[in-house]
Length: 158
Image 1 (cartoon, one colour):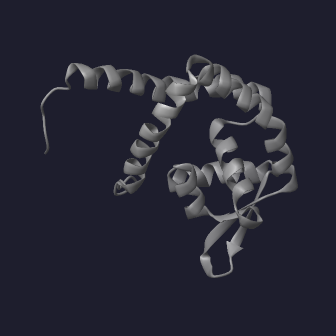
Image 2 (cartoon, rainbow, N blue to C red):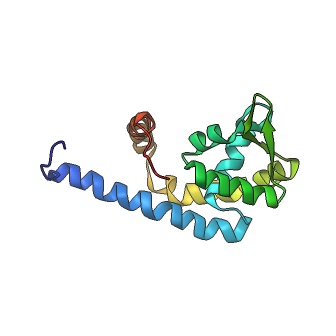
């Protein structure tokens, strides 16, 4: 079961604020972002991922991996964006059981309109509180943590 030793003082001083940021920051961004743009942070992440993909198209499973959303969550987000005309779902020609998500012109326009607001919120909520050195130091640490999480075996949630 691993090491059951309590966190030491330095570990606790790192862990507790990390959990706080991971919990509070997305909620704070969403509380401001949704009323301003009509997009949730998940919607925005999907639109960004599709805008960066070749031909603005990704298989739904790849989109889930790219956005770190579960397959069930990504399906709900894509279905909602499809109803709003921001994304289209298309059958995957290589695998008729799979579907692709494609960014529409309206979705790209919505993303471009939301970008300044999102950037402003991120700067105000995060970068305004950090020095250039903080960012340079923390960036690789967070990237290493993210890579370790990405490499972890997927959970069996249904």
